View 1 (cartoon, rainbow, N blue to C red):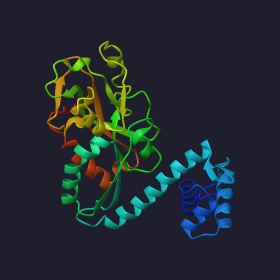
View 2 (view 1 turned 180 degrees about the vertical axis):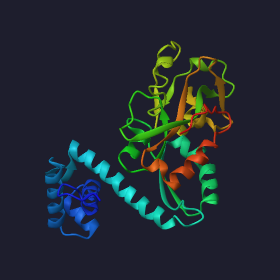
View 3 (view 1 turned 90 degrees about the vertical axis):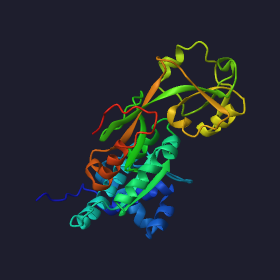
View 4 (view 1 turned 120 degrees about the vertical axis):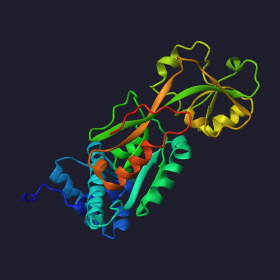
Length: 305
């Protein structure tokens, strides 16, 4: 049997690291954990000694993770989550349905609005012991996949195929492909002459080449906060937009959708999880529902892990 060594971090030490990172300071972490500040400081110093790196920058305003600390905290969250899954699945192993406990899902806005509701409805009906918890995360930068990498989510609904690689230890698979379309006020005679309305999450690296080749698309003159605001502005005649299918699922009658032709850009939507959690009962149950939940008008590329 493998023995622990003096360099191994105990679960309580991991909890302290996460608490300091989440609360922004030793005092706040101590309060959250029901410990004294000196106990938290002692635990962090012990973890730093075992790892051999400074994990937090201490200052008058609190404590911030160093680059080494960010890595340590991300792994700590994932290890603590696995310990929770271990306990839950061991306890429920003899039950008819072993899928139990909280299931943390990160999703970008249009997926949370138009993809997840029927998926979660079926998941709850088939596995009443699962407690889905959804967070909407902007799909920019590290996006929803970053939530999984940081141990803040078990599964992410993400856009795949971008230029930013996923962190080591993550697994991803496509669910469906969605096309982009031109969106404008209904009845407008020359929609391509309108100013462009856009938002930060739209048209990332998966459409950049197509976008750059279109000399009729002007620089955005209106930047909205999200795709819902874009649709409202477009429906009011304030411009045109180029939007993916999921964002158009609830387009109002004031909006007209025009196909961009055979060379239209597309993006792949899929899921991201960790290699460890991919085998857990709750995550497997969610993935089964997701694979059969291709929204109307979208194409399933036949990918699956």
